[in-house]
Length: 162
Length: 99
Image 1 (tube, rainbow over the protein chains, first blue to last red):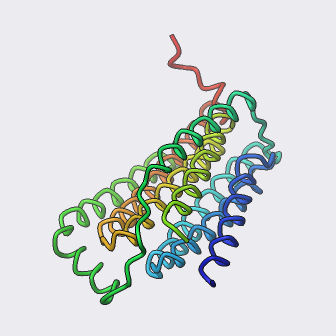
Image 2 (cartoon, rainbow over the protein chains, first blue to last red; image 1 turned 45 degrees about the vertical axis):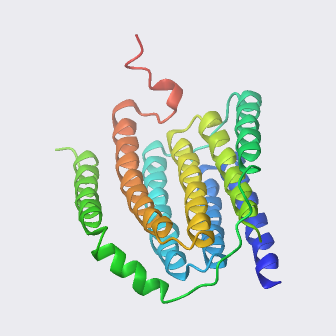
């Protein structure tokens, strides 16, 4: 019962916030809507019994990504000296294409067999940690290298001109 | 809720993100649309992971989140550089490579 209620709350917030991201004319408001959408996604993770991913989602996405985007907007706005309004184009074509993709995905999803939700067994967090240092250890290291390279690259791009 | 409810929700968010990518003119707005699409994929991965009792989906999601953070950092750095050089971040004005 609580799951059904929680799902609908999270779904309504998520869809409304997503529409806010793509429709609001003010870029700064769009980022705030994105933060709401990311938190709602974290709520969906919580409903799917993944509290660890909920925490990661809040820390990295809602905390990190939104902060970076807000900084980028503030920087470019300050350089322009006026608040950035953004306009959309091809709204009709975009809506038709997005609706077609959605319809195609849903018609595909209807063929998914109904799976019973298995009962949670064991400690998910412990299994996750074991998997990350066991079979996925090499991928974890690669992601670390990727993050360092990406941050160095971003620093190099955005460095002050001399 | 059944698995299909989560999948349809993810598909809807994905379609909304696609709409944003297609219609936004501002480069940062396009990046926000891409964020939404990646987020929808994460919902799919976690839902399948939960309903199939397979840890792989959670691991995939962790990696997607980490890679997305890297993508946003580099993407926004590129946006700032483009802005410094061209004084605009309208995607339509960035046609230097158009033949």
